[in-house]
Image (cartoon, rainbow, N blue to C red; front, side, top):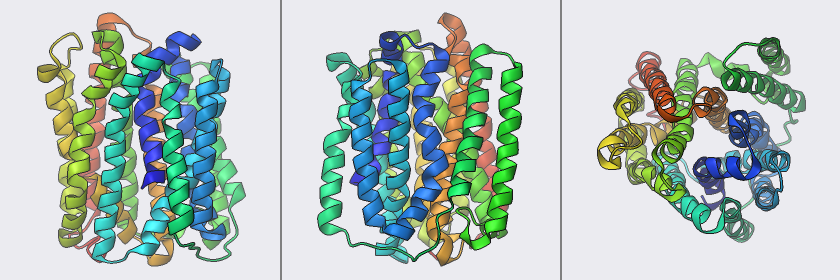
Length: 441
């Protein structure tokens, strides 16, 4: 939980620091998108091979290496003198996170089974939510007191503690000598890179240039080639296509992409709107996100247990729809009005909806495929969640490039899109999950 809290802390902290980073390193809207996406791209593309590496070389070993790499990259982020160096260090952070995240869950999965696994996953999700809750106010305070570079240094003591605990107390676990799918990892990275670059270019310049279309076509072609290679590798693939024989797994994948795409875009845009449009300090913007993580942290363990009893269909139908209603409430946001009446109501409703979905989603994914594919399915679902956020952030430049009233209007349009995506994800769960899906644990 210590190790996996690192990406949660980092993701929430960086959103609050974007305006300060932009001013200090002279970044425009497209550059600020890449501060987020330079991290999310390798994280999304390499999560699967990170999990496979743990199965192959040992989960504890890869967890420790990933955590150490994340700590070193965080120090490099803090020391960056220009935007290019910061983006390179952020990419290195993404590689470290891709190594530690799936092996954190893999270690959890090998240590628990049955109902205790549902409780463990709920506790793990709560820890991530608490880390996300601590991140924005702490990061905002650090930005105000010591500058944005300090936000990356808070990762170092957490990483060192995780390494010590893992080395001393975690038993090594591995599944065998399955070969690593390097070609699949390379193709996934290139495909996501091309798609992200082209969408970032389009959203920040508000037009579809020849470069944009070339990037989109290349990304789609590379995705097709990735699927073909995975089909050829069969059981040796990092994304075995046999997993998609499960209707529940297909539904959960689509639900994850839609829901986390909606959430990822909003969590980047709301702090930016409050700081640039409402004159909030970074710490105030961080505190504005606090209800979201507190509610999820408090409810995830309970929802993990509830899902083991009733199955995931209703939590994953109702939770995302409530989240979508929260996004619709945020359409009335005015960054210059009172936080308590303008921002907080929508944030609380979004949080209640997500609290109903986070732990049930993880539990349902682990239950939707056979035991030999649980690690891969978990890693793939995490990758899909990050990819949804990646694409949403790539398209957020259309909002980040605005100022004044136009910024508020663009945010409201984005909130409507997010609401539609979240409600659609709840409908997907209702259609694809049977009433008994996921109860086997």
